[in-house]
Image: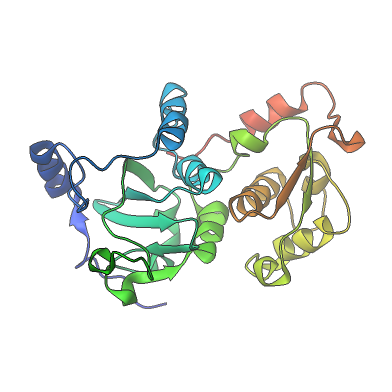
Amino acid sequence: MHEFQDSTLWRISSYERMRLERGSSVFAQLGENTVLPTTLLADLRHLEQRREHSDLLEVLAACMRHRQSALLCLQYEDLVWPITVFPGELVYHSPRDMALARAESLGTMKVLSCDAPGVRPPGHWMHERIGRMEHYRTLKPLLWNIALNGPRNTPLAEIDGPVAYRTTASREDRLLAPGAMGAAAERLRRESASLRDMAKWPGLSLERASRLVNALYLTSGLMVLRSHPVAREPEGLMSRLRGLGKPRR
């Protein structure tokens, strides 16, 4: 792992000052009239009502669910790390590869703002809006990294509850899950399981099972079965799961 350098990132104090002056993200470059689609905005407002608007995984899930691009400004230690996600193209734009983020700091990242993109994806017909090609990176490894190591350690709201899970993830995607999680992802291709069942598998726990299903959901590799027999959890189990560990702030 290369030593992380912050030369391409903003200090939070500078970011907040510029955002206050501009009234929008200092990284947005497509004009003040460019706004996020109404479908994505509705989900983000719902997150705000639930006081989860800074939850990195929930915001990423909303972008992936609606296949809508967005510029996310993330708090990383005392820095602002801007990334632009392009769900349709499965790439993201960032001045630095997020694989270089320190694991202990990745676990405390949160969303400062979510705005319309300031750049276009590679191959877009408005080529003058495309950023430097070396700043575009594959999205799926980022989603797995944040799901497995980021702040949230409980299931995303969209897939929570008395349900059973299966996966349709490709072998290439399953290889992004390390060790016991990779074996669990392979097992989910052959059988359906509840979170309770998965927590008993070798090398898993309730938290690790939650992180795995979150990663599979973000990468469009999860089937959520709400009427499957194994989805009938004992009374009170889901409340215990939700109380097991709140997302780390």
